[in-house]
Image 1 (spheres, helix red, strand yellow):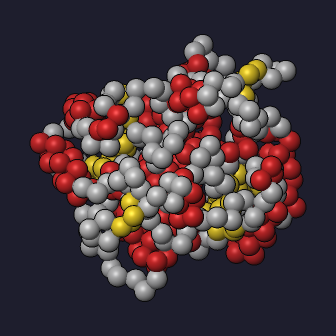
Image 2 (cartoon, chains in turn red, blue):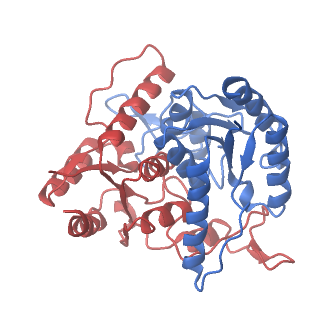
Length: 189
Length: 189
């Protein structure tokens, strides 16, 4: 029986999204999986922008209901953290009790990126909690992103692969994806 | 039978997190719900930072498994989008088929915030898709954030409340939370 894996990540926003999604699907098939990605299915036309968004949401959730596992690309997107759509999808699969794996193409972990975001202006408060100038706590759990994401993967026997991609290839470099595919195949197939 | 609602949001990162979480829990109780929030339970000590993160992930997921509904605070966090931990939690509850509601304290929608992020430098490509200088597509689904989040709530009969809070109160103003609580109570109780 083949295992269906949902390929989540911000590559859907690229100009060459279809090319990258096809390349990921091909690698997943070579690893022995049945891949499924956002954009694989026709979106029924809707009369409004919001109706269109709701249609895409419905189709992507349907794909996830049918999938056995997720590989989430948690590479930071427009800022310090992963794409929130991908974070939702990772949570959706974990909430269903499915298998979860992840990778990132940025080697600096969550803590290092938050320090960069605050340009180093992080100080300890009277209780010893480190905070940015906006008062928000700066966490360091030695994880690649928020503990719910990284923890959600590792706590269900998944693996988070970290690859240090070139800055102009963080959404297109598939090295980390290939590594996590091999790990997922060894665990699930 | 009382309905248990999980209160998700970036207020856990505030210096006065406990105070805000208590205020939200009190409002939820007054609305007729049984509230539960991250931080309500003791985290068992762990020998490493990562072990601590994994413990918190386990406890928060356990609370969500026991909850019937989520109210997610999707106010933007450290940038253009919602907190990825909250996005994961919203997905986790939707993946379980639970009730989902959300609010944001920032009135500018996702599209407006992305335009601000790119300082207006958004142009249409040869296929008519609008993109930022980094090549990433600029979507406009008339939603407060990524379509998976907003769509996930609205498609399961939830409501997304938008409140225009003062800039220095976006994580502490509870007006939008009270409005969404009243809507959730009318629908679920």
